[in-house]
Image (tube, rainbow, N blue to C red; front, top):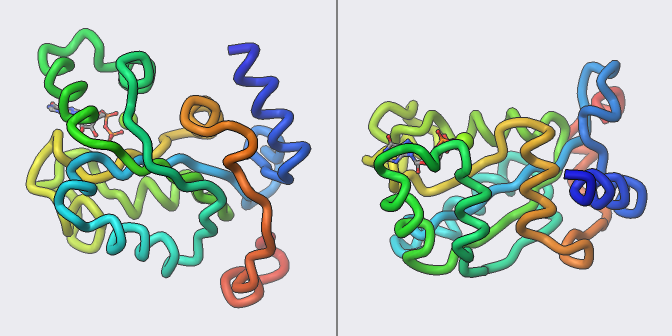
Length: 182
Ligand code: IDP
Ligand code: MG
C-alpha cells in the first residue's frame, strides 16, 4: 500500500496527473482511470469499437497496452470476489486471452467511464452503454473500469509502469471543456 501511494504521488508530480483526493474541494477534478478490455472484447473483435467510444467522448488515452494477466494480478484485482463460488471461472475468463489495459484521463473520468461501461450484468445494462450494447452476460461483460480514486491509483500501479503513462497535449481540450472546468 505504501509503495502504491509513493508511486501514485510520483506520477501525480512527474506526469501532472491529478487524483481527486488531491483536489477534494474543487467541483470537478482531472483524474486518471483504468479500463481493461477483457478477453470477451479481444476475442469478439470489438476492441476498436470500444476504444472509439472513449475517444469520441473526449477522454484522453494516456496509456495503452496488451498483456496477459498473471494469477497474481487477477487474484489482487478481483480480491473482493475471491470467496465467491464462481471465482475460478472469472479467473479463467480473464486469462482466456490477452487483455488490453488503458489509462484514461479526463475531468471526473472515473465516474464518467463507469457510466459509459454500464452496470455489471450486460443483460441489465442500459442500451447506449458498452455493456448494454455489447454484452449478454454478467461475467463476459467486455470491460473493467476502476470504481473509485483509490482503486484507480492501485490499478494504475498494478498494470502500468511509470514509463508507460504519457503526458502530451490534448488538442481537443478547448472543444471538450470550458476553461472553468479544467
Ligand atoms: P464490476 O466489474 O461492474 O465492477 P464487480 O462486482 O466488481 O463488477 O465484479 C467484477 C467482475 O466479476 C464483473 O465485471 C464480472 O465479470 C464478474 N462477476 C461479478 N459478479 C459475477 C457473478 O455473479 N457471476 C459471474 N461473474 C461475475
Ligand atoms: Mg468492480
